[in-house]
Length: 89
Image (tube, rainbow, N blue to C red):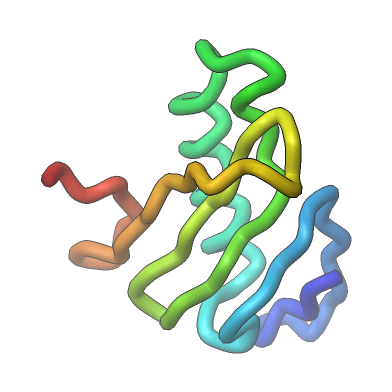
């Protein structure tokens, strides 16, 4: 559960959210998760999101995989000019 710091309304997510939860809004998480689902769709069950780690107001990691215990894969999103994107490296 995350409380949106703009509206004050609670939001339930079907995955764990940890880290600096106050640093991003519910709208930010919704945008990031929508982008991650598009990116992960070709992976099928192995692209299931199980945790979102908010590192800072500028960096969010979306952890995914078929097995929560052994998976170490994640997508990192960074806020650039007000939009969330996966940086090209």
